[in-house]
Structure formats: C-alpha cells, structure tokens
Image 1 (cartoon, rainbow, N blue to C red):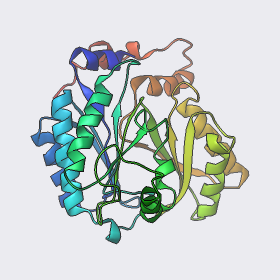
Image 2: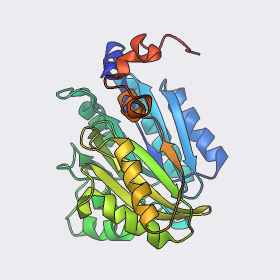
Image 3: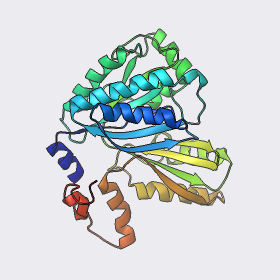
Image 4: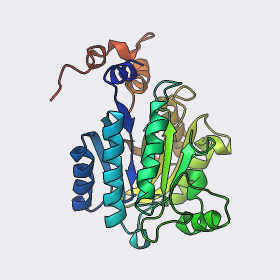
Length: 303
C-alpha cells in the first residue's frame, strides 16, 4: 500500500481515537490542542451530534503519538462525564476506543506504543483494556455489550482484566478500549425513513456476525434526520466498500426505502476509494499508485 510505505519512510504511526463527545466544540478544541501540543498531526476530526462522538485521525512518531494521546485522554477523562452522556452510539469510556493502526504485518511499533500508552492511561485512574492484537482478537463490541454497567460487572468478576490501571471503570470516565489493528473503513448509510427497525434489520442482514458480508460490522441507529446503517469494514480485502453500499441499498429498496446518502467517518485508505471508483470509470486496472498525490508521497497540494 503506497500510503503505508510513505508513512513508514517518515517513521510515523497512525491512531484513530474515538471520544464520547460530538456536540461541545470547546471540548473538541481542547482535545485537538492536547494532541497537537505534543507534536501529533491531526489529519481529520469527524464529530457527530447524534452519535455524540468524535473520531480523530492523527499521525506522529511513536513517542509524540503516545504523548499526544495521553494528553487527549486526560482531557477526555476530566471533561466528559459518562453518567451524563446521551448519544446513539454504544460506548464504555470518555475516550471510548483508541486504536493504533498496524499497516505492515510484523511491525512491532504499534504494540509497543499501545503498551506505553496503557501505562499512561493507568496514571489517570482509568483502566486500559486491550482489544484486537492486545486482547485475543476481540473487537470493541465484545466489551461494549451491556454498556458501562455490564463492563463493571465483568471486571469485578475477573472476566475482563485490564492491560494496566484499576480493576474497575472510572466513576465518570469509564474505561479505554486500547488496541492495535489493521486499517479499517467506517462508513454510514442514511436511509429515507425514520423507522430505526428498518435500519436494524438491514444491519443484521449485512453484518458478518449474522451471516452477512465478510469483514463487515453493522448497527442500525436512529438519528435526528431518520435512520442509519452504521458500518465498519474491518477486512478491506474481504468485501469492497462499494459492495457494502450496494447491498444496503438493495435491501432498503426491498422494504420500499431509499438511501439518502453516505457518510465517511474519518479517513480511508486510497485503495478503498480506487476500488469504488474503478467500476464507475470502466477501468479494469486502477491502483492507488495512479493517484497523483499518492504517487508523489503527498507533496502536491500540501499546506
């Protein structure tokens, strides 16, 4: 993957921290300042008021990434109170999930950075719970089922043991789900209906867990503008994004519902966009290396 090669040349790591705040601009600004103040480059901020959640995409050298994430998690722990939180997206922490992305198999730096970050999180009195490569391959959904209350019960029973920190969630900040994973794509599809049951039914049909598309996770959620199928593509080689959208559209049409539009959460690898564009352009061979900015290592159009 060309982007991964460019990043590796510069010795950078990527992280995609998700914070349980998508409405308060002052808190989002404070999170951005904490990350940037440590030398991390904030590439994108996606805030969703219905989800009441923000997804930051950041890149930095390993030391700066750990410092920036630790500072931002401290802001989240101080300024986000889960006991007062309202939003349609499941969560168990103020800094709900913090993945560090592993682009190349065998690269040990993401796991090393994650373990260093776990120790910093523990200093806040917040448990850092491993997932993905740090948690036996489990996904965040395995810990969010039942919400913060159920997670507290599982930790008290010794069923869930943190990488570092206390053996119970923080009273207001909950826990941080800390992981190392390959790149994924988060993509939402908005439906022309207010019936969340339709979105939930479609989500159940397309997600891999219930016999749907390989490498696809999906939830049906209610938003202020209607209903939404929220998806994560956790295996980019298993099912193309275009196929996911087409399948949701087909199943919605079977129920007499149209698709209003799509929403990319955060950033996507160039090859995912290329795979989606190639059929529309009638191109049989079209790789990410045919994109000018990718081939040039991001030199054109830089700030």
